[in-house]
Image (tube, rainbow, N blue to C red; front, side):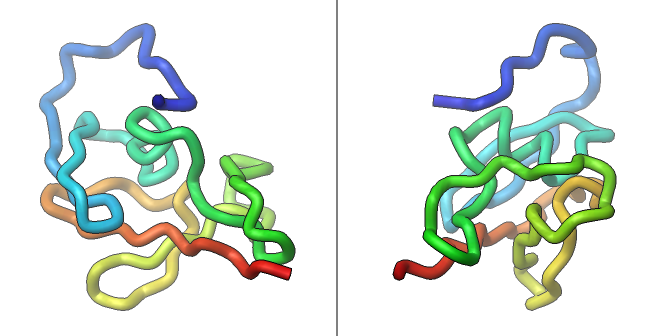
Length: 96
């Protein structure tokens, strides 16, 4: 189940992307954070306990929304715009 529900701006063009190896869809202009949370219940696992996280500051100031792109780059999901066909891997966090 998705954590976020889209209430407005549903008329923007759809963008297909891949999340953890599975096909997903978001809208043009979405950040990676928005794209992931409108199709999933969490963004990544905590670095300390692997508990599900959904981002914290939502403006690129903290370290809570890192994801890895298909080209190997690690980016902040809250300040990275989704691109068509982008591959995104959520980091599971560390189990204690």
